[in-house]
Image (tube, rainbow, N blue to C red; front, side):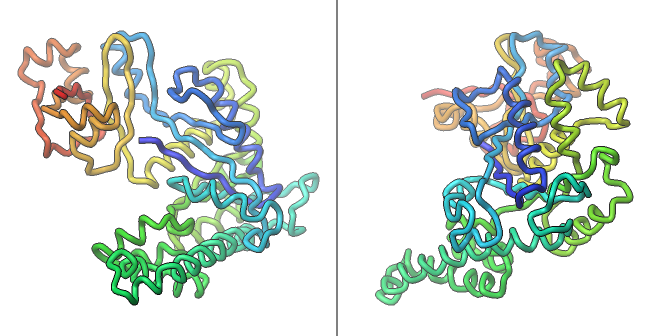
Length: 368
């Protein structure tokens, strides 16, 4: 599935630094299956050590990890919903994404002047969130006006839209995100509400951008404030240093990057943490295909069944699905090859109702 996230934040919080590091990382991903990356788009790979393990047993020409497309959402400043900054130009982009990455400044630096004159992560969060709420309120009100007349005439689709829009508008007017209202809905009304694409219905990952002298954020009071806010209001948080990520992006190879992280006492880069956290935020996991041409991770939501997973590879696979020949990474490590797995009777033949598990290695049989 095409997975995307929009990165937002006030000026001088480090959004551009982090996005540029993402873009640099993406430029090195020669196996990325997109033909063109727009200037305001970066990619980050989802770290998965299982790919290397699979490759060690099944030699292949290329290894393709799961990736997340990151869109740089420009123009989001205080007053954006009323046309300040780039105004509503950001709306078309941000409505398309699956998740929002909200960069929040959690560092002091006199050389980087905060747009509001001081560092206050909770104020910054509220400024951005209010702009998104106001943008959604304008959209929801416009949609309600458009559908109200048809709903009174008993048009079924318009009635469903109005039933979804009215509680959403009430939440937005109370300066609450649309997701608060949607969580209380059920059945067809909830399905309709989720299909309307409100910005504040999307899950949010808060990115605490910390000083390079303390990249873990341990003992950082700003990080503690953000963490407490997220615990109360929902979402997830990841801590990284944009300055460190920018430096990592200039290094030539994986070995240099690993040594650099080791010197800092870090197990992985902040971008790797960000990618993994986004994956978890959206309730996603991976299955694998493996052969001499490629070993590849595919992204599916938790609970996806075999035909849906097959459709991620090609629509013909889903349309003509017959069965899925499946085994686990543990099977591969124990028996050493697909042939040995099959000989040992460990190759499973799964049908249409099989729920694909995280880490399954699958070969789909289909007929169209």
